[in-house]
Every structure is written in C-alpha cells, then in structure tokens.
Length: 350
Image 1 (cartoon, rainbow, N blue to C red):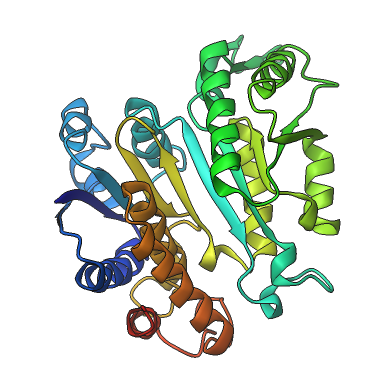
Image 2 (tube, rainbow, N blue to C red):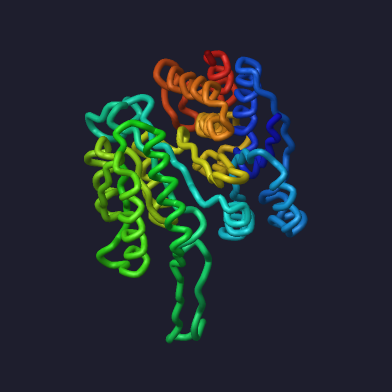
C-alpha cells in the first residue's frame, strides 16, 4: 500500500493533478498495486489566508509518505520567491531530495522546433544536483542601498554532495542502458573552485565505472549542442543552476512545457514528482491546460516506487495519443480539453 501525499498547489496545478490521479487510478486497477492519497493545501491561497508556507511539522508529516505528487507552486498575488523558497526549496532541502531527474524525450517530431530532428534524436536525461550550489541561498549584502553596495551570492558545493550526485548519474546511465555515455556539464574555464571539485570528483568516480563512456562540455556549449546535435547526449550530470537552465531548453526541444515532467529524488527517502511548467494562472479553470506533463510525472513516480510495468504503460499511452490524436501540445490548441486528454490516456493504457 503506497501512501501518496498530493499537493495540487496553485493555478492549473489542481487541474493537471486531477488527470494524473485519474490515470493513476486506472493503472492501479490494471496492474494490481494499491495506494491511498492525502491532499495538502500548501500553496499561494494558504499563504494569503494564513501567512504560512511550509512549517517544520508539515515536513515531519510528509516524511511518513511513500512519495509526493505535486501540481504547481506559484500565485500571481504572492511576491515571487516567497512560495518558491518557502515551499519548493524547503521541500527539496528538508527531505534531502538531492537529485533532480529530467528526462528529455521527443514523442512526436511534428512538435519539435528543430529542423530535421526525429524522435530518436532527442532522448536523453539530465541529472541535476538539487540541494547545493547557488540555490543554497548563502550570501550577503554589504552597504545595501548605497552606491557602494555589494551583493554576494555563494555557490556552495561539498565533496559529499557532488560525489553522491555523480554516483547516482553513473548508476542511472548503467541502468538506462542505452548509449551508456555520461556527460559532465560545467564551466571549468571560469568557475575554477566549484568546477575543479566537480571535475576531479567526476574523473575519480569514473574509474569505478569502466563500462560507461564519459565526456565533458561547457554549459554554453551544451545549450548549443542541444539545438544542433541533441542526438549526441545520453545522460548529463550538472550542478543546480546549470541544470535548472538547460532543462528548460530541453523541454522546448521535446515539444514544450506541456510534456515535460521531473522528479526530485531522495534515493533513500521521500521523493517528489511534478510537471515542470509552473502554475500557468492565466489558464486556470478553463479546462484547456495540457495535463500530459503531470501524467508523465505520475509515471515517473510509479517507476521510482518499483511499478515499472504500470509506468511503461502510461508512457506508451502518452506516446500513442501525442502521435495520433493531439493537434498541438500547447494549452487551448490540443484539439481536446484537459479532462479529455486525461481520458484518452486512461483509455489507451495497455
């Protein structure tokens, strides 16, 4: 019996989560696993009413669950940064979800903005370190508000944090068993402290995985190759900020935010899965938002729980309807409503 904590969140989050739960219910009946859910109201509305984001007791409660299924966080009436720091980052850091896993896979070449690229050309995974770097929130102001003001933002990297991320990436590359190639994406020519640590650790750990081919690319070159030759990549490992940036580009070349799902993973603890496109408040309540990213996130969640057959069935159903049914992956242009797309996936589970 899996215990799933559901955080629908803000904007269109509840709408896409509902479709993901619809698919999850159907998959459980077809593949024989059992689960129960509890919904939590963490998000913008709760903050506006009670002035609360996420408290320590909330974290302790969430630790009792098998996994977390998240819709979206972000409210137009709440100043940017409050919910992101107080909910998203607090969840990741407090639950030690030190891996952000982002598959980038093109299901239908018609939706790729790149010329002459086929589905088999865009199929890679980004492993992003999710608990350190610039997102640690360390730094200070000096002489704030004056002409001599200095803002210092620290990229905090530990050997332990870097090594466990890199080891996860090597193991994931081996398990994925495709090209068995792992690329380190960084900036060793300029960021000489943090990326000296990353590169040394990567090269040392690589010796333990002789079956994995390794290479290195600067982050700016990586974005160039994503556009020119995405077929070069199998698995990429990188730090928190670079991973955040390149995965949005990855989402675009795989067809857009409507199909992009991600996982915040603690391999020994509670992980969290979500669509990466945000709350899209302008589409709230219109039943036009694409729920496929949230449905794919539910599939990733099942894969992480060990329900591989159900996870594969969800992906296969998504591939089928993206290839044969939808007119577009964009909100309001799919040819179907949000709930109808969820129904299509459910009907095509095999």
